[in-house]
Image 1 (cartoon, one colour):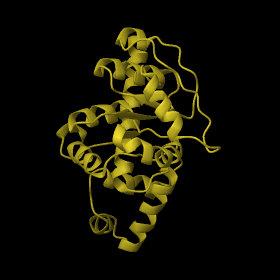
Image 2: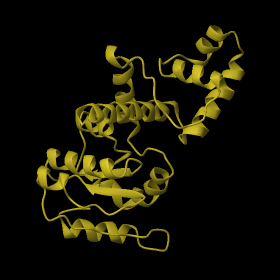
Image 3: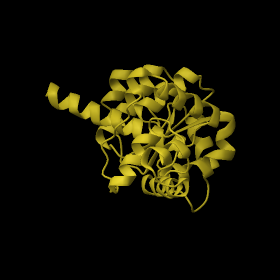
Length: 220
């Protein structure tokens, strides 16, 4: 989805072949209020051109997630600052790519994002996770999830979200470090992510979505 036909044509060229079914949509506006009300088709993954205004991008992202809470959204722009990266991840974006990276990386990023992963520059993801863990209001990242966890997995997850190392978790529960690694591996599989940083980010986003839903219910 982009207001620029050339960007859409580049997306199409980058994703030529039988592996992807494309539905390119040219946006007629970049104004936030209009994008907030835009009728959005259902898709497994959305690729949004974030070249326009930040309020417009945020409005479109919020619109998609309001109608399709499980949507996977990847944004493409000239560049992303750390502050922009943090804001977009908080809002629910699962992937960030620059235009320069898109031609080569977009065909690889889409299957990963569609499968529940994240495609974010490692340094930016690391700084975002660090900002969560060092924020006094974000230290307890309890999350509502439909994922079926054992009582021990729930305990280990809580410690991971407090940024404890395997050895520290093992000592806290009087179990072996090998057992902790086993539980961590199971958690990564159940949440469909590859790294601890991705797990923390996913839990943070789900916590934010739960809080937003509760706020909407109270407002209603």
